[in-house]
Structure formats: structure tokens, C-alpha cells
Image (cartoon, rainbow, N blue to C red; front, top):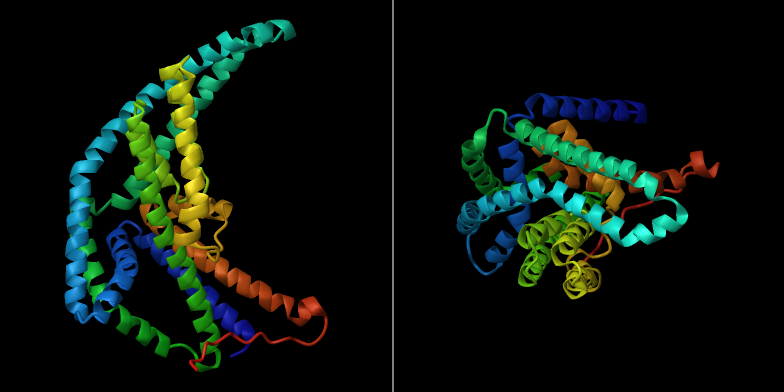
Length: 366
């Protein structure tokens, strides 16, 4: 098969896959969630196997514990978070208005000297309109994700189907990997294995490591802001931790929200305002110097801008299913793009001479 025919074949396969996902996106959520859950829990099942627990028993124990934890979180945490988030969204316009008032009061003498006070009403109106539009856009985006992911399923079917799919996938995971490996074309098997290993390392390093970082940071921010008495401190901290899945976005969002609320609530007590700032500075120090190097590592290769684009693009196309697929697909595309770039840099198209063949690195036991 010529290279042109291979490219045409894989392009046609990719097109068919995307079209099928678009056509079936309303029913894919429990299956994609089950597959993702099995992937995340597979290392734990492997560890239980090493200590003598059968694969079936390990899968059953892990899934039961996870479902119990998920239900407990859903019953206890979600209602509180929803109530707090709704109250915070309602209060944001009043917080913005108060911040504008404080800015005018503190900057009034300076504005009088430079003659800029006359532009303040127009500026306040523009900022208010921008905030309102941002809140409306965020609400519309979240609503589209929810409706797109739950159009035909409902929350009950999601809770029932996902654990079943995850259980069967977890039991048969190693067998499925071996079967797919046996289908690889023999001529390119080593290269494909190397690329697949790099993709797995990127996905595992980021998803599993960054998820743990999010939990730790969210807990720290929520507890710290609540201890100093910040209004909506718990929900702001949890939001900052959740958005920390995208590097820098979570901490920046949490910092802006918490500082805005702190200034309105504590002004002119600078001690509590600086305490709020200190919580995020300390959290960023711990994340950058301890958590991320230990749990995520430096070999992930997912740039924050690329990750944000992938989340927005796949979320817009496939709803909540797209959000679940965004990170693994972005990681896979990044690995393939880097491999293609290496091939290009050793090809006659770039070098203008003979092709330099890059052989995949294969570890051989001594």
C-alpha cells in the first residue's frame, strides 16, 4: 500500500469516526465516562493483582468503593456547591458595583488632577455591561454542555450505565490492550507502540496527576478561605481547585474572585485582604515547587493554551462528552504532531537530501 493510499485510508477512518461521534453524541456520555473511569482505575487494579487479588475481585472492590464515594459526594457536596454558586453569581453585580465605588473614592483626587473624572460614568457602564455579558455567556455555555450531554440519557441512566461499562472495561482491560496490539501492522508495530506509549504517558501523567493536584488545591483553598471568614470562601476555593486542571487558569480565577470579595467585605482592613492574597500565593508556591513536579512531572507536553482550546472546541462540538475527551485527544494529537515534526525534520522535504530514519527506542531487559 502506497503512502498516499495509507493517508487516504486513515483520513477516511478519522472522518467516519468524527461523524459517528457527532451523530451519537447524545448517547455516548455513559460509555465515554465508563471508559475514562476504567482507564483511571486500571493502575489500582494492577496493584491489587500483584498482591494476589484476582482481576474480577479487584475490579469489583474498586468500583464499589468508587461508586459509594461518588454517591456520597453527589448527595452531600453537590447541593451545597450549587446553592453557594447560585448565590455568588447573584451577588457578583453588587460586588462589581461596590468595587467601582471604592475605586472612584480612592482614585478621585488623582482623577481630578488629570481631568479624568468625567469619563468615569461611561467606564462604569462599560465594565458593568462586560460583566453581565460574561455571566450570560458562561451560563449559556454551561447550559449547552448540560443539554448536549444529557439530552436522551437523564442522570439516572448515567449513574446506572457508567459503572456497568467501567466494570466490564476494567475486568477486560489487559486483554483488550493485548488484542489491539496483535492487530497492529507488523512493519510499523514498534513505531506505533512507541507512539501509543508516549500518548499513554502524557494522558496518565496529566489526568491522574493533575486531578490529584486539583483535589489538594481545592481543599486547601476552600478550607483556608473559610477559616479567614471570606464570604463564599468554600465555593471559590473549590472552583479554583477544579479549574486548576487548566494550569494557571484556576489559581488566577480564584485569586480574582476572592480578592474582589475580600476587598468588598473587609475594606479597609488590609490584614484580612492580605491574608486572602497570602493563601493563593502559598498555594501557587506549593503547586509549582512540590505538587506539580511530584505528581504531574515535566514530560506531559500539554501547553495551557492548547489545553484551553481543546476544552472549548471539543466541549462546543460534543457537549459534556467533548470535555471528557478533550484532554486525551489533545495529548494524543500533541504526541502525534511531535512525531510528525521529527519525521519531517529528517525527511528530504526538509533536508533536501537522503532520508534519515528515526528508529523507535525499545527498552530491552538486561
